[in-house]
Length: 506
Image 1 (cartoon, one colour):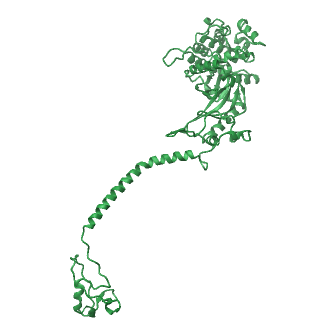
Image 2 (cartoon, one colour):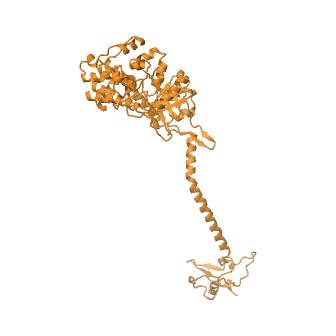
Image 3 (cartoon, rainbow, N blue to C red):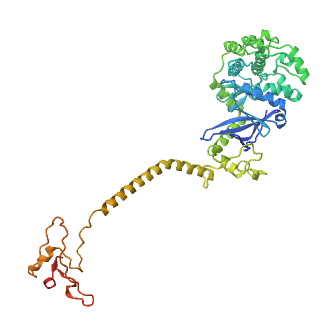
C-alpha cells in the first residue's frame, strides 16, 4: 500500500472516530481511528475501508465476512488481531489492532537503498516470529474445538509488520482468499503477490499450511540476500520462472551467510509440498538452531533507525489524534421511556469538521452536536444540555432517599406539636400579670399600706406560686377625670415601687 499524508477527521463509525488515510492499495484504504468508550476508555486502532465497488459485490462481501470471522479466531502475539468488522452505509470496515512500526518490505528496501543488507540475526528474529504466528493460525479451532484449516495464502514482506517493540506480526489473516479473487482480473496488482505464491497455489491445486511455509521461505531468502528471488517483466513470465527456474542457495548470492542456512531455506522452497517443512513451527525451530535470532530490543532499535522520517511522522500523527480525542469522548447513547436519545449521530461523515480541516470546503455540513461531541473539551463553557440533564437526573436520584426521610420527620414533628397544643388547651389559665393601670394586686402589696410612707419596703422574698385569690377591686377612675391615683405606686432611686397610701384608703 502507498503511504498517504491525510489524517483529517472523517466522522463517527459506530463507536469509532475515523480519521484520514495512512495507506492505500488496490483493495482498501487504511485509516487511523479511535475507539471511544462511554466511561473514558479509548484505544487507537487501524481500520481498512474497502473500496465502494468491492463493498457492492455480494459474492466478495460474503467471502470477506466469512474469512474475517475465521481470522478473529486467531489469537497470538505474532498476529495482528482482527477486532471488529463493521457494515454501515453499504461499506465494509475491518477493524484491526494498531501497532507502531513498519512493514518488512519497506525495511528491506530502505536497507538496500542504503547499500546494506539486513543483519542475518535480525532476519532470523523477524521471520521466526512470523512463522510462530502462522503456526498459531494453522492450528486455530472453532468454538467447538474443530480445526478451521486456515491458510493465509498471502504471506509476503508487505504483510509482515515489525513493531517498535521488536516483535514481528503477520497481517491480513482471513482476507487473502477474497483478495485473490479480486486480483485475478487485475494483472498490474497481482504481480507483486505472485512472486511469493507457492507452485500449487499458482496451479489452482489444493493447498494447505505448507503453501504458507513456501511463501515464508521466499521471504527469508530475499531478506537475507537483499535481492529478488524471481524476476520477470510480466505475470506469465513470472509464473513460468516460479514453476521451472533453478533456485540458487542464499550463500551463492551472499557468500558471507552461513552454509547451514542453505539447507533450511532450500527445504522450505521445495516445489513438492511433501518435501517441505511439515509446519511453520518446524521451520522456525530449524532456523533458530543454525542462526540465533536477535532479541526484540535490538530489532526495535533497528526499526526506529531504518524507518526514519516516515515512522516519526506516523508516531506524531497518532500522538496528535490521541491528544485531540482524550477530552472529547462522546457520551453514551441513553435509553429512557421515550426511546433512545440521539446524543450523537452514527455513520461515517463525508466532510470533516472545521477543527480538523481548517478551511476545508463543505465543513458546514457536519452537525453541530457531533462536532462538539468529538472536539470540544469537557471543560469549555456551555456544555451540552444532554450532559446537564444527566447530571440533574443523577443528583435527583441521589437526593430522593433524603427527601423521603425529611418528609417522614416533618409528619412526625407535626403530630407531636398538635398533641402538645391539645394538652395546653386543657390546663387552667395562669394568674393574670400585674398591670400598672389597675388596682388588681396581690394581698402582699395591699398589706404595705400599714407601713410608713417614708420607709422603703424591702423586696418580697421569692415564694412558690399561690393559687389565685379574688380581691376586692377598687373602682376605676373615670376617663374624664384623671387623678393622682391613676398610677398608685411610686418608684424610688433603686427602682423599688411603693404604694401611695391615700390611694389605698378604705
